Image (cartoon, rainbow, N blue to C red; front, side, top):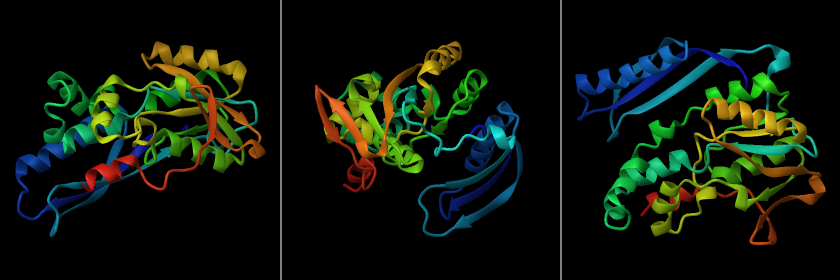
Length: 261
């Protein structure tokens, strides 16, 4: 991470029976507006009508530029580093559950909560570009990762594995959006194992954490230290209610068991 996004190529696969000019225009207008807001050029792609689809599928590839010595991978954690979580969990998973299971959730949670949850893709949104830039401006960040499938737990396990370190998570420090808790509760879903796009994990020296969090706050991005990097022999663990337990990478995202029913 840490590169400046420059060029975007998009493949648009459209359903055979439900594609309209309005649908295509709407999708591409969203692509154009977002790219323009970030100074990105839409440089190419492909569009086709595809059999067997019941909804559009958009596949993108982003290219960017970064000085070699400014590239931040997820392999650079050092023992003693702290892990900062931006925003909270689980932004994308909240929106997906609210949209895909709208009928099942009606009557179980308040209408206004459900409406807010459905808009999580846009508010707070799933882009981490601003958060990455803010952190890199004030600190020599050791590692970054945007947790997606497998949620926060999956993202932390991936960070530790990539850096060959251990990691200790304090669950009481993890911010779970009220809307996330509301849509997860009826399905007995653990928010920390739900697809978490929109959050950013930042690994940095302990002495830099206050400076990073302050820089993020100036961009209206909440952030908090949630974990400590430990030697590999310590493993990946979670502390909850005074009890420490081992953590493993989830076999699959928590949303899968909900959507398959």
